[in-house]
Image 1: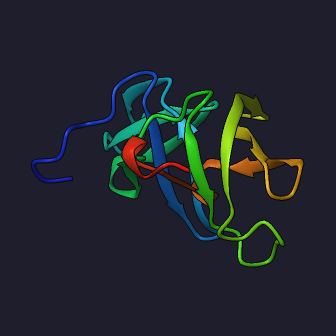
Image 2: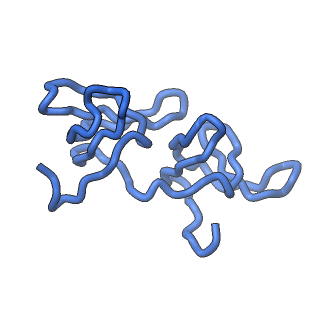
Image 3: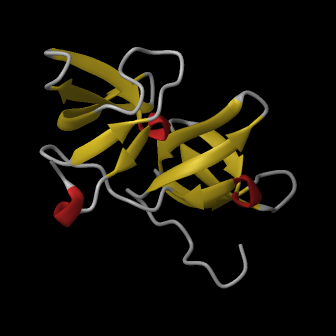
Length: 120
């Protein structure tokens, strides 16, 4: 991870997996019991530190985001996070999309935060 800041307990991290990126919340930093490699414990699973990077933003309720979901009619729509919750260890967001008049359940990797001065 070079000179980057190491993820801390409670940080959102993006983990590169064979099935694509996924976001988890760090429970704590640990050493692998067999190899001694530095890992992150997230949702009860060890992930090598080399596969993890900070998400780069902290999702919060009321935050404006753009949905990056090419398979969905809400793709590129702007919405507002109404809540952050966890399903089986995966943090998710409910996003209200005014133009569609509906709420979308979204993985955090599908959201792009909008700077406050660019919202609306």
